[in-house]
Image (tube, rainbow, N blue to C red; front, top):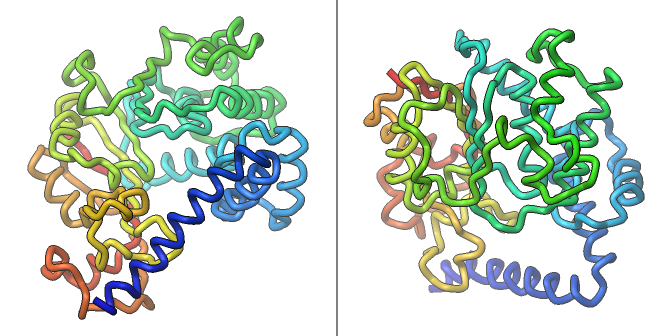
Length: 342
């Protein structure tokens, strides 16, 4: 019991902090927005091309007027361009060639700028994008501001990628992705893109009923699959929508998504009510994902994996369901896999 409390007490304190911030955000919203902005900048520090986070914080605070307090930096172009370049570089290194005018599906697009990565992939040669995000809390402001940030920098030549279509095709791609009227008027996030080019689905992927079998050439997800509770239904749907020869690119986190402990789920039962917000994960390990995709006719390649070799596994309180995994499986905090349908 004492050993369990060693992990449970920090979780309770984290839950209290979360509730306190929620209450304070209603009383002093600007101050909490500043706190969240700086915290999110530090979280994604590796994506910034310069080291002075305080400078970026001051600039972003001034520009955004703190309208987007949560994950505020995540709509800006630095992060998404690095993610896009890394993804296409990985595909190239694995000798994956996407067809001309491929169809693309972004699974779990997030709420800060749901169209940033689809926009860049569209400039990389996609002909149609499907964007799936079940969380209804998508922020109109950050989506509009984030796309404006990318768009202006592309038009000025400040943002470019060797994976984009040729320069003479770029502006036409921009025109066909955005709805000019909706974009200029800063309308709701779904009305700033061209519905002929971008199809947005605000529901769980496994519940989508109107996607044609074999309709997707390329699919990507980032920090998404580890949160899918009904993963068998989700993976069945992935098998259904992907074309033969189609490619999936998944960046998966296997840690506990909390600063309390890198692998808190190994010791704490997530079925307990007070831990559900902290441990909203399906607890699958890398070998489980590969096994599930292999069963569904995907050939999987591990592009990279992050092993926390200096982490101490507390095997005295390790939950029974994790006991059969190897140390490498248990210490894998994240991995990127490419899966090709055969």
